[in-house]
Length: 411
Image (tube, helix red, strand yellow):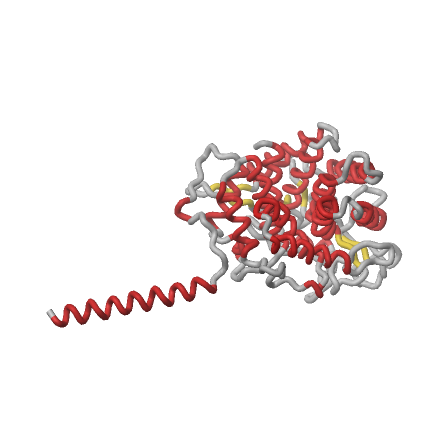
């Protein structure tokens, strides 16, 4: 009997100690999201947007885990995917979606507006885009920390190094360079911020970024834009006369097309630069339509080189174009025919590049994981470079735009 009591006492002590340690450990862990994996079920009749969102939540229980990230990191891929969740919530107000977004933000935003893992002194334009999530959460909670975090990102843009002609450098480590990617990373946030808090006073500067990349990166023959432009013409990848990079990469063009349709949300119709930006969208849409694969509706990794060795129909760029075309039509910027092209692209994504698992979760294949220029190891922007970069199933640069395209097409 004594032994039984002693053992029960030891067990109780162990249980209390374990509970105490668990509490201590939990307090140091990232903010938790409300939806557990076991609760998430996917039925066949769900829309593609919900299917993809719930797939991501099931596979990545915490939103910072998107892209298989092991530790919380303020990053552009999370900004992109969670922005698609924000738009999805407008169509299907499932509270799990907003909890997933807020869970991400609350891992980073401190009471003074500081953003953990973000370093302003790196002047990396990629770090701005996740700031788009802060407008909604500030509006709904009125918590000052979210406003202060937006102000911090706005400060980066105020101080961000620029080309002599006024375009934002892609990063401090890439001096004098504008990349198409950077237009999406910076301009929609910049446009929304200046409209929300500055009485639109910087919309001309937002437009200037598009003007600069349009002027310096466009190919007069195809109408496509090259991945990047080096004002100094010093980079080994840069054309010694024009500063342009050597190839057209579909995802870079996708970032640019999405930047145009998203920044236009904040340009009043009577703003002097609005028509100019709509014109850029029409120009790039005309150029891209010529290179859409007639059979699949998709686009190749290297946009203008269909059929060349190693080139492949690529998911992220195709998803981005489907979104930009569909939204462009829905907003009245593009002719109605582009909605048909967007639907054709979406059919290609769902019929040719999509895998459906037994539990109803979905996987988008043939997604280029990452590509850039310069850096270490050195990336030369050659055709061989782009077609040999790694692929990753359900890469967030594909899943976010896929959700956005599904929403615009009501699929």
